[in-house]
Length: 199
Image 1 (cartoon, helix red, strand yellow):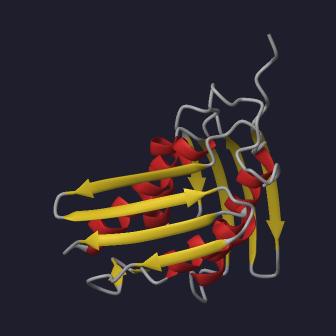
Image 2 (cartoon, one colour):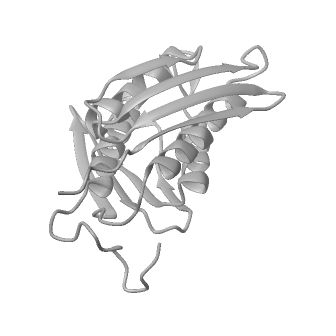
């Protein structure tokens, strides 16, 4: 009986704007340790960890005195790099999808670990900020993620009247979709899930 692969990775990203370290364990229990300086983002990252059953440690120091843009985008980039590094694509299900409601809000997220970055993001927020957090920055987070995880990602907020509910359903659905896509398929555990033979 072969040993299970070690699906963990640590990535550091240091620029003049941000210093970020991300560690992931794709076969975790959903634990998060986050120090980003952005409490609402930490709350959303917790949704990825808990619903994706991915253990994540994220430490970020950024130029928040200017704007949160660089920090949010670079966390998405670094998380994408870490998941890409931790993931051996042989044997995974590859595709994942989830619908998640929260009261009146409903979102759908579909992911394909295709090796090709692409983002379709259909979200119309009912307001521009949750507290002091600019909700436009979530697009930058997901764009950074797909560019460096090499995934195709479709995000659709189907309905919602509360911006907090809208984005929370998106992050919960994202975590659920990730969990399904990176899971090892016991019926095809030695097979790359592509007719091309590579991803």
